[in-house]
Image (cartoon, rainbow, N blue to C red):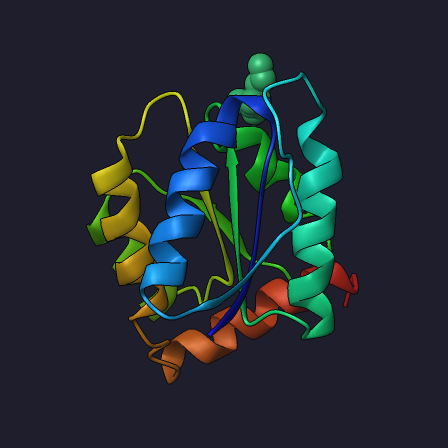
Length: 147
Ligand code: RB5
């Protein structure tokens, strides 16, 4: 899969580890940064990853900040993006099956690497169920257009 990944300084370490894991799993990963521990602003990286997903350049996005929360809030401002902050694999399954989420955000300060690997693997490996959930996701899209 073609993925975009990004983080701020608080997510940098986990982002590096998750990127390496995703590459080991055979994914095509574009890393938009940050590339160092210096303080940066998470919305800048959320925007780069979210816009890649929204344009179709990436199938999915992965974002890491300290809590994952700011990244989710920012990414969800981009039309077509459904970003979810995940702490466990069960919610990763639900986010894909019911919500057709296309961006996962992780908490660099609270999530261990092995847990993060399991979350992203589950997220990427779970299909959207469609059916009754499609209409609900369509209603989320309608909110973006004030329809
Ligand atoms: C940075 O200190 C922190 O606020 C940021 O990484 C993130 O957790 C925001 O939601």
